[in-house]
Image 1 (tube, rainbow over the protein chains, first blue to last red):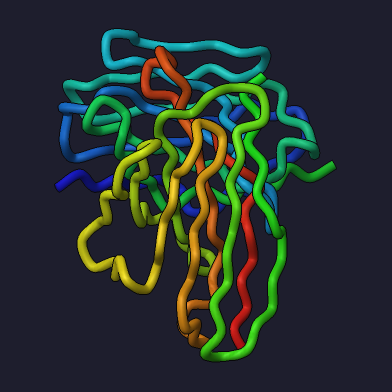
Image 2: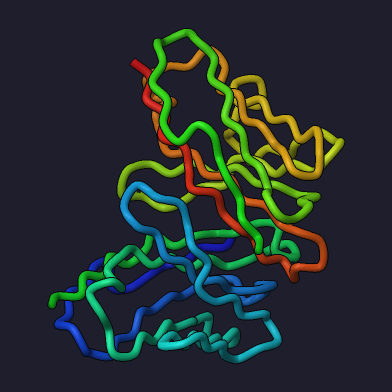
Length: 112
Length: 116
């Protein structure tokens, strides 16, 4: 059974810092790995999707990496801004992406 | 592109009543839609997967007679919480996957259900 863990559970940083969010999974047979952002009381916004055959994806200030052999993914946020404050969720896609197993999330606060 | 809407965004109902939540893919056809539940400060748990024109597949521990799912068209899936009780209060989120999207799911904004 796939289990996804995110560390840290919460993170507070000053504006402008670069930061790394960690995600680990127990079953390396993932189809893809997705990072999401969730604002309080809102749905999920997809940030980056990494296919199992890929090592990383980049979008603007965000970079996500995937290492299937070690069961880890990281989300790197460069030059953080207060608007980046949100909960970040990672999810391992199983069964051709039909089943997403979510981590509990990292609550990020970027202080101005 | 790839916008998913949910209606209503919030609903408050009395115990024993049924509540229907709609999930629509606005600018694409979704052969598969998913329903998730999120408890406060917890992550999302997949409840069921629905494919257009066929019965939904429920995850272990999810009562199919309690949570009725209908996926009548390529752009609409509905979740009906029957005979709702306070323990059904939660945040329900749907997602949709379009054809040839390499497994990527696009999520709706969620529906906050409160059962009194």
